[in-house]
Length: 350
Image (cartoon, rainbow, N blue to C red; front, top):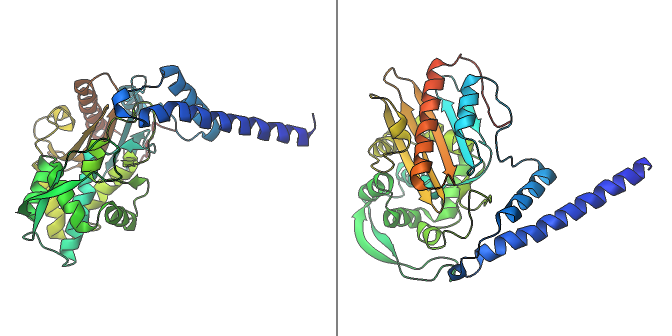
């Protein structure tokens, strides 16, 4: 066959594979996005076929780490192996800038971990004089509606509270009503996305308020399907945390309010915090949705070292299993950074 013939054959095969991907995606995604009452789930073999087709066409969405440079990475990659569901990890040593990740550039559902950026967007407005921490706003309480019955879930105004109290509820107890209250104040998901983009963070995007996100949860299994809506990469989230800690975007007072409030978080006792030895301080925010659990935050060691960490776990059979995986990964990061050689950038995903 001539060179031209080879090229035509490659193009023809690529077109056929792309058409197959579209057809398979329709088979997998549409039943899941249809009437929730039917609970139609794709056959696992169909999901694997879609994933393999996607990976072979585009080569960018690896579902498991493939190479490991040293024992630290090997342990981290073993803990984050993807046979029971995708796991994404990213960590940054803020003293050296050294970064390690497993599937760090792959999208995962943020769930409530997006609330850190919502809080930062609000506090940026405080810094600019648009509102204050004593300004009062109503809780946004969902009104009953069927999944996917509207683009935005209906809500009603509830009790008015000072913004400082709404921040506390949002970050320490992951209160969704308080979150949607402040999300409405700042201008909705578009305003938060704009703030994150201005901060220079890519691969981060929210599309819905929390009421809609929770109401319509479950249409896609994040352990098997990558959905870019309301998602971020672990690396993007770790970079966001690092920038907040380093005071890049907020005034010193707003930065301290955000970090102090994250330090009072009462959710996720079995996640990052469970993997830390005594004396380690964790300033964090958890997230949970259908078949996914996450925890992101700042780890401060007794000797003053600071790490930004983002861990997203899907599948694993149960929420306790996901939480145990988060704790073990967090401890591996802690131990690895304390014993690892300096001046080296790690990656277990490439």
